[in-house]
Length: 269
Length: 272
Image (cartoon, rainbow over all chains, first blue to last red):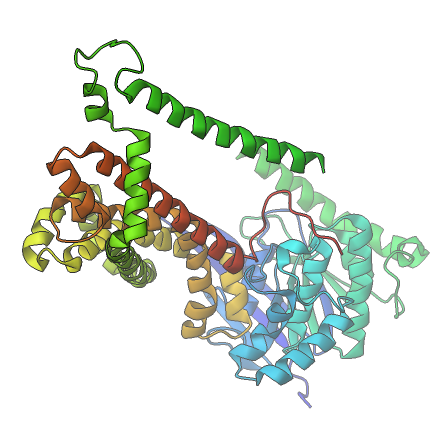
């Protein structure tokens, strides 16, 4: 259908922030990343390496200083309308109930209220929140709020899903549950996913491909690994398999140096 | 159960304190009840401080004859008008300035100047401009309410979470939809936080305006009584105003509870 054109491609992207005239900070330099249709790509890297910046560029929330963003082969201008974004921090509208948070995107698109509610209830059920629609975000637990955010994004049926450490604030059990649910939702209608994380195990257990970013400033991809683990996967169980451990060891060899570099930089700041 | 009992006994104690206060007031002002302590004439204390029985009689008189209702109505109407006009204009200007940084930078020193000016001194000018009727009192109340609402809206819009904004954008909100679904609700939460203040100040504007020159209203009643050294009526007016302000405050609390359900209250739990 889309032929050979990648769903999302970032070509030689550089992002330089200028603050108060003089001080410049190059977060990303010469980064190239392509995501095929239906592919689950994780981007891992040490803290402060510009992972979120890269994702904001892909979302069109941030214009790169140089380089091109292409969506289905067409250059991106403004916001990326093909993409849904799952944020790291709280992004739900606190004055709307869970149900109204899920319908909000449809509302923006002018979908009739009745239809929006039917579809939103369906999505709330799919993320395991049937009967919680009338609650406000502050009445839900962190995991439940993430589920609402997931439904809020997926109800719009985006072709590309951008996820910025979406589960990093959750406890480990909730996190693994959410990861499995994400994989299940993803396998139902394969979207292209860019998943940002600093957790290598999470990256390997979810993805088709893992991309390693170097430590900032001027970070760029320094390694790519195809993850050939069989699907469907259970994120908790797959971590015990020999192939997982082998992949983890290989990727960690590349990543370790960057993590230490990033740590040194943070210490010296 | 236990907490209900303590809150009940708290109410009893609060009532007892009130009664005690009135009893004290009565004892020290009633002529010849106590030997003269400070004043040489036994009637002087009553003259300066009024007498609770006289005050209660005056209030009873006002309400039973119905003569106070017209004045209360005027004061209430002035308060409500000042509150509504001040809130709406504060909301509109606050949104506008918060969303257009150039205008905000341009107006900044003027806003600071007008805000730091003691605005009650505008009352005489408003009296000249708008006459001694309701308009001048409403105008005074509006200048007091406007700035509270304005600063809260301004703050509220600037402190909208960037993530929430970015999320709404990614979900497809147009600039207008952002205003309606993100900026205004966020600003409204700040407006509600200042509601007690702004209702109180609308009331202050009305009463002070009436006190400075008017032909009706509770402030006018107090002014008249003071002119004839009728201290009992002055105190009666003050007590009526206080009760009135408490009622307004209670209304605001009720409105707040209804409209701000989405905000977490500390220690709130809900049975599932």
